[in-house]
Length: 189
Image (tube, rainbow, N blue to C red; front, top):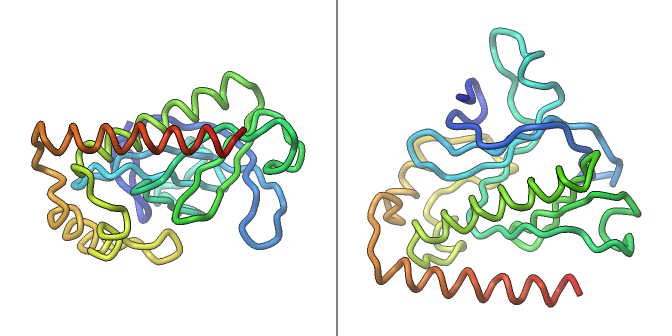
């Protein structure tokens, strides 16, 4: 499907209901979550909404949160309750040093979200050719807390060479991705 409207437009890879820990008060809220490849740049974004897509009026709403996955990591939360306040079936997305924590109804749903997000993050890292996330962000990818700016995002993608691929950069990125997975698994232990 295609995401439309004020927020992020592009191909929807995964969508469904989750509970999400709020950024300010730590309350858990029900949110419709979509993994969307942004039109024009193909940068994956994780967007949350208060209502499911089938409940939207003609004009789609702005996401309650928009997280471009440049430099992100995704992992299941430990079962000891240290990250998800004891909620089962939880996973986290770490972006710029902050953990965004989500929980699903079933363990299978959580596994599928982690798989989909991790794949999108790895594919983006390969396309970027090993570019450090901070240099991509400095080039104009908006913060998830700023209004969406398509021109800045497109300029950043062009500056980072999103449309060019080489075997050498893909190889360098693959080793960078696998070393990131090692540090993530040791952190979750």
